[in-house]
Image (cartoon, rainbow, N blue to C red; front, side, top):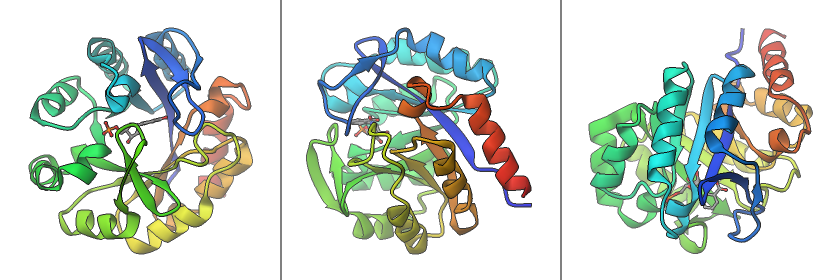
Length: 249
Ligand SMILES: O=C(O)c1ccccc1N[C@@H]1O[C@H](COP(=O)(O)O)[C@@H](O)[C@H]1O
């Protein structure tokens, strides 16, 4: 039996609220209320993972550190694994993130701007560190996806050589658009690395999850689902049932 595609409902926090953006652009927020309520709703619906993002920290417009820590702690205590992201760029922010009880952190900007520090913390924390490869075309973007940060495949080769355990791959052009994931990008990344890949951006219907589940054998381990769940395109229960059925088929 093929392993099940892990589903990670997203809770992105800006100004204390759960929000979704379009193409990750500041100012395109749709608000979905209290982030803890959102996280607990996904937990009640059966989520095994949560992708939790401090968007203010990612954009450099402040942070939601205490709120994020509360959501991560309560959700983790409820048995949900948390992937924590946004603004983790130095020892202090890393220590605060790891102390929340999250299962792993996901680094974006730091992997582009502080490669030596990232190599060091990969060596120290292993599987608890993932790197988010947020791309436009094949160019990486950092600092709230506002600045270019080098070539996707060169960075991937460097991180592979440093022992990075896993990548979260986001096609910025797809994120928040409900246009379907970039399967070609995911196929290319999976061909370039033997590490597991979490797909992010564009999931809009259950068929997208079926397509991603079919990529588990080549290295797609999970999928982050945001807008589709908040917009009611399908329920998390239906999504979980879909990936379960695909694994059993
Ligand atoms: O998730 C988003 O919609 C998003 C939009 C714009 C910027 C960042 C976004 N998300 C996450 O933030 C981390 C990067 O944070 P940092 O660069 O390490 O501070 C990225 O991996 C996304 O998961």
